[in-house]
Image 1 (cartoon, helix red, strand yellow):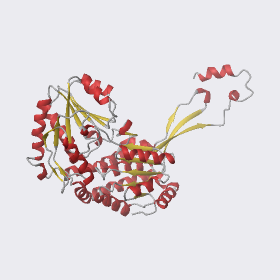
Image 2 (cartoon, one colour):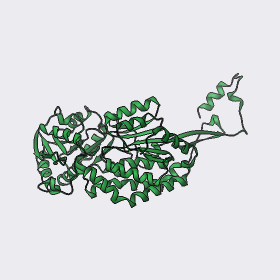
Image 3 (cartoon, one colour):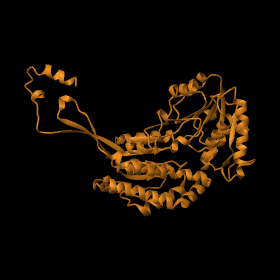
Image 4 (cartoon, one colour):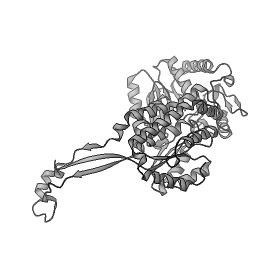
Length: 456
């Protein structure tokens, strides 16, 4: 635990100025070391996740997607870090333009509690690959995983290079008061606004990975059985505590009844007659979140679920019908195992309702019709989209992940992570052997020739 944030940042700035973190060989070695550490300590990490969220082992393994991020970065880092040449105007001949990717310096990564390991490590991969030093502030709401993360980083890396700072909101405020070169924050829009406001005092650029009410549209023309399985899996994975989980369903009324019956059957198939006894179902992270979710169960017609246990923070997988756009459950991101179901007649109606609200982090559409897919893609803005599936877009290094509008700004994963933590420095390279007098005074009648050259 580091008690002096200012001193820690000063040490990291000194390390960065040494130039060590910029060396490609060093970056690759640190990425490989990080990969080995994760691989060797999976059981310890999974135990922390079980204690914090009661995550089933299989669901915990999704946190190790960061290994794929490391492998992808190691494979492509030479290409990413390469200086690129570009053409220059004829009037500047002889010259060439160059674009040099360079690290930003010392960066801060503030991660969230729902995927407390992955959401700290995945952006760290980009920070290391780009040549930065980094401080990680894990969420205190998942303390066991936070302790494991801190232990692994502290035992294997020089704190002047990589460090984990644990603590509550006050510690976060102390960190944010420091002069970082970039901040990546994952969490709620409310806290995101605070991060952005504080960062603005130092003109620190930010990447905000927030959330929102992610719509899931079900067209009348879809594979109903496959659609049902993928929705139920994506919604109740980690007990719905996923920023890109489907937040509500918009179902074509022609298939609504059939879809509901299929979902009821699928919930039972996944978690049994009593999901509370299922070894494959997680729990709510703390009492505050539990009480918030319990309050959302007061409206609408509960089709299944609704059962809660405050002692274990259990909330059953719940489907709710009979809610409106004005219902409490439709006002803010749910972030739990409650799925409201609304209906529509025409796709234009569904699009209009979505567009009246803040832009979501994720949008889901289940439809066999290419025309409907094109219409939704063109007319609805969202951070990410999955067609005929849910959640999996987060796990693909080749796809940048990020929000838009109130669901966030900037992105990461794969090359996008490298770009987020890099500055692309423009360089004009010229030589001394030709120096035309065209640009120098006295100008005389040079304007006419200059105009001709500027066309090229």
